[in-house]
Amino acid sequence: MKLGIGVSEDLPVSVQQRLAADVEAAGFASLWTNEASGRDALLVCQAWGAATTALEVGVGVAPIWTRSPAQLAMAAATLQEATGGRFVLGLGVSHPATMGRWHGAEVTRPLTAARETLTILRQADAGTPTDLAGQVQSSRRFRLAITPRPPALRLHLAAMGPRMLELAGTMADGVLLNWSCPQAMADAGARVRAAAATAGRDPADVEVAAYVRVAVADDPDAARAALAAQIGQYAALPAYASHFAQQGLGDAVTRVKAAHKQGANAAGLAEALGTPALEALGFAGTPADAAGGFLDGLRDAELDHAVLRVVVVGDDPVDGVAAAIRAFDRFTAPPASSGLGADAG
Image (cartoon, rainbow, N blue to C red):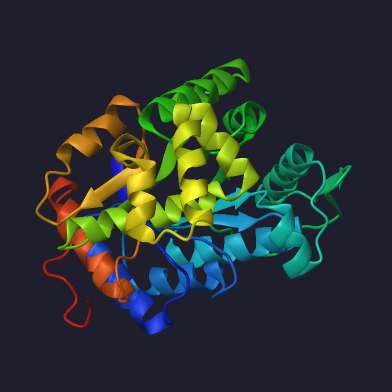
């Protein structure tokens, strides 16, 4: 199982580059960021690629509504060229509330839109003219004009529901799971691999990756509170509340919603969630805590790639990433270079 680190896009580019060098030096396989309302995630990946030599750099995820498929193809190909094939483009359908308000985008038929986006990207990446007049996404006679051709594009699809998981197995190079307990990861991975086999693909060619939240600090209670606060934020979104409930965590979600309504602080949210829910959805502890058992649970779920998404504890996100590195670098491959960057956290 590969280990990666996930960080927010909302950090200065110079800091992002120092963190990328640290993550690579510590032996992690990859570094990922999301795209929300901060820095452009693709440009962040470009900065990471320039600061490293072997680290995979990925966006998890870019919404399919904010760039046309042709523009995504151009950007991804440019990143593949710049990084020597180390870029991974994670795509997702995001949420209607933010896509509509922020971008004026109409989120419609998300499964169809995802399938059509993948189709257009595959056509463009093959160097052939695009030819799809879809129900949601369309592109005709676009040919990617980059010479020489960069390495083949790697596409991951964010998925929670069964049909999106099956689409990932059928058309993508990987699936990116989010907020899943190990059993849910195992079930999702089995569905993805079965869909790949049905489509005549080798299931081993489809990577099962997951964002896994980790909150690391010298104060374990503060780490638990930070993780609980983030779970509470996601539980407020209907799609994630349903996702948690399907994993048997419905009672915990009900408790944390009630605690939030009553004005509970982060520590109160942690108490409302309870230890089983916290441990099912992430890791909260100190750099010295035994994280091996937590990772064993992910391996038992047959996860190919665990992206340890850093939950910031306190006010310094760089310290949060450094603490996560200290907690998990003993489980990585031997570092490609010696020492951590002197300027980082």
